[in-house]
Length: 446
Image (tube, rainbow, N blue to C red; front, side, top):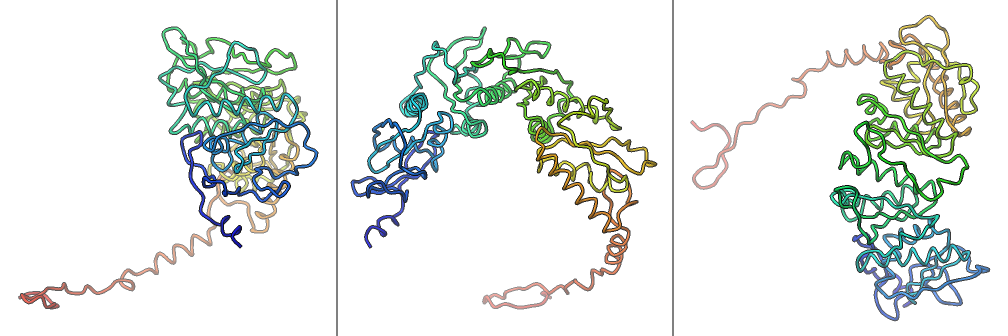
């Protein structure tokens, strides 16, 4: 069947908006879409949803090159436009046509975002920054850090878009922040997504250009303001200035500790310089700051004091853990407990003192704004307790570190003593030489 043979032909590579390569069909009237959906016997739709009862539709006619640019690598750009605008896009590659479905506002925003994407092909993106919009935040970025924020081929900016569900463009129109020339970074998305991406950009700029957003005391030079901050519904941000050693401890390796606290609290948590900024609703920010405070108190060891009010929090589950199992649950340098936190989006710590070995049970505090996450963490801890008891745990060294069993040590030592290098050594073969005729001789020359 020629149709199946034509569909099996290799695809052509065309540029997409980040400067890398995306896949699209070869040029020509007989080219076909890779999508398997059919509309009145015509292939070419880039949507998996049914084509019935879709409501109002706006159509944008594209050129052949623009189709690949709107599609993006493996359809990533098209999915971002759909996610930010709320509309649904059907891209017909064969007909070079983009169909937009949704409400009037969703269709208008999707069409506008598509135009911004296409403007990147020819130069600067044209955005009227003087018009007040509820889907836009603007960040002034110093020109000497634009490349750092963009990343190679726009990889960093595209990564921020994927992480927060935004669309981000450097718009035409420059300004100055004091003596620093700046460029405008436009961030499109909902309120939470824009604030998360904004704090990420502030952190990157302050790392590269210290003192641009923070004053000499480490505080913000001016308040963060974006569309939606004035809705008086509890949305906002809180800050806490950290010492140098506190910052390293709260950040963690590759930001893992910061991400853990953000996931458990449900807030946006970012470090701009040494300034911790928690953004979100009031209860989310309160959890994030409490978790950060308790984390820093663990830095010097010993129990973390919780008040009676803390014990009655709705984001807390308390487990009674045998003291003999606490070291097994915590793991070497806390690795086992950190793994549970990562898998369940929780923040966990015990109430016991490392120097106190008289208590039969210890309390393990499991914090998270998600009840399902706390329940899952409780199940994992109980499984580890049962496993440790079946293996005859208890008394295996330090309560807060995992040590190897004595039996395993004896086997390992016996193996090391029984090993003899002579058993595995090879006799050294004499070197080879060649005579004046190229023939090979063994043995040493006399």
